Amino acid sequence: MLALGALVTGLVGPIAWRAVDAARERGVAADVSVMLAGLPMRAAQRGTPQQWAEADLQTLLPELPEGWRIEAPQPLRFAASGAAEGGEVLLVAPGRAPLRWRIVPITGTIDAPNDR
Image 1 (cartoon, rainbow, N blue to C red):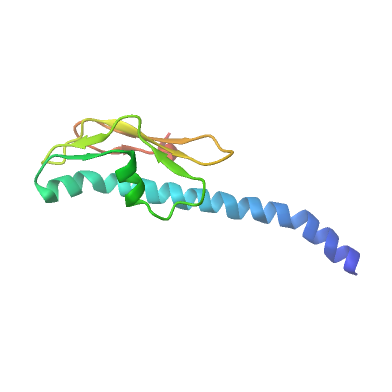
Image 2 (image 1 turned 30 degrees about the vertical axis):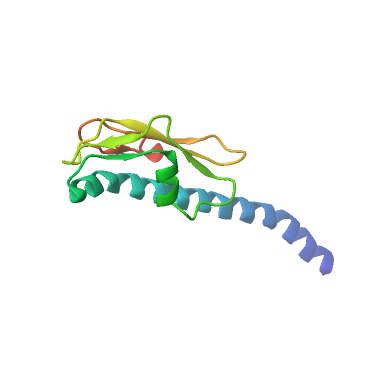
């Protein structure tokens, strides 16, 4: 009976771990999408042009899993109206391909990785 339990654990454990890991990645990606979608509104509420560099974006998402990071090749810029200059943001996780978001110029809408 113990052998059967060990066998089931050995077979199901890795599958369950991958499922949990994938769910965590989807959750973090959703958090990034929500944060990016709110940037035009933040600029419009402040009523002044805004710029967010990598470090600024990192502070907007303080609970990234260990080893994960946000990269922005260029700072994201928004006019006081919320209009965007465009740009891109990457979510880099160890051992995974980076997820890339594109900020559409003018509208500031987000082209998220799961939209493609």
